[in-house]
Length: 78
Image (cartoon, rainbow, N blue to C red):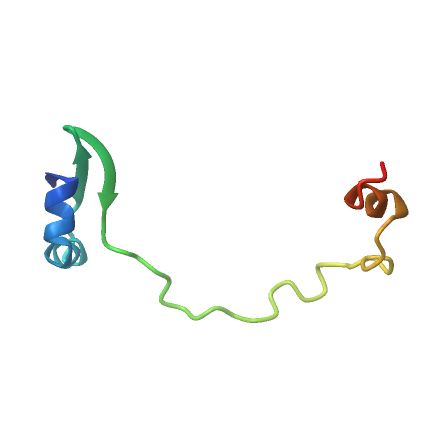
């Protein structure tokens, strides 16, 4: 694990991204205090499957209708 200050991290960001990609953790400090951690991104290998929520969510028939009390509040009448 490497620790460096913000200025050094900004100056050599592309090098530190490469190190993180290769598995090394990078700690970025401000005045000697750890502030952030740069690590390798571990994304999902499987693509997202569309339609997962199909049939599980119900939208009310009056979803697009705004109550009169809320309209008045937005217009400053309440």
